[in-house]
Amino acid sequence: MSAALIEQQGGELILQPTLRLPSVVIAAGDRASERFLEFFAARIRNPNTRMAYARAVWAFMDWCSARSLGLDGIRPMHVAAYIEHHPGSPQSVKQALAAIRMLFDWLVIGQVVPVNPATSVRGPKHVVKRGKTPALSVSQARNLLDSIDTSHLVGLRDRALIGVMVFSFARVGAVVGMKIEDYYHVGHQGWLRLHEKGGKFHEVPAHHKAEAYLDDYLTAASFGNDKKGPLFRSAGRWQTDSLTDTAITRTDVLRMIKRRAAAVGLPHSICCHTFRATGITAYLENGGALEHAQIIAAHESPRTTKLYDRTGDQITLDEIERIQI
Image 1 (tube, rainbow, N blue to C red):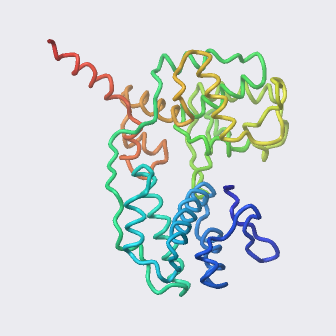
Image 2: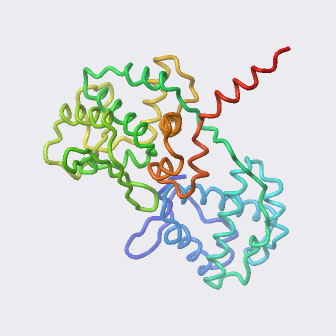
Image 3: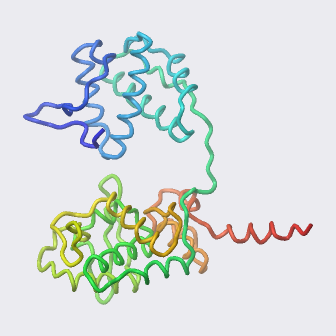
């Protein structure tokens, strides 16, 4: 299912040809179908959230169709039964319930259904105090960066991209969305303008190593006056000394990271988010304050930042080793 779920053509909302409206929605009439499409087109702006919610809603509607439930016949007990037997992880179940609840809120406002059957349904409890994202040690991160062959343009790009993620705690989506003008100087200090979720911009000073990596990359790339062009660009197949005019995708960044990690013997579990966790952990290990890490990472809550903190791992291991038998 593509993130571009809904297209607008001539003022009309068009469902992708490869998708079909759920039969439960079609049976409820044109107004229900229109309101259903509007939910994804107008209510949800983030394409990744739109895609995830679409999967969740389509699965629920298919479940209802298999039980001959009409849109106006769905009751809290049906939603509860679906959630109770959902095969996904607690996070997936909570996301599915959120999608269903938000959709029916939209349908209630549009007077398609009288009440929201998901309002009173409770999802599974899921409390996370430690994130699952693997982090690198300082030596591992340094070894990875030093292992990149920077004698060609693609190597310089990869080092700069990883460096920005490590030294600014940036999400990969924010980094691949950067334009050339989003790396700029105020006086002698370099700054990074990151494209965060919800169309927000987050500006942070560039670490001196990230500056050096970016300067080397941009000097070799010779983008000229194309300030509006993507900062990190894709490379043609088997090409190492030229880049296209198209921004590199998150998928390509992940493939690159997996390839670079394997070359230096790092675990296959290393991913794009690893460098966010690595940077935050290194910062806190060197005496940085959690509230400042939260600001740099652009997190709404320090609890989210804490999920990336791995400073307690070695302390825990040291304490466990005190069990002398």
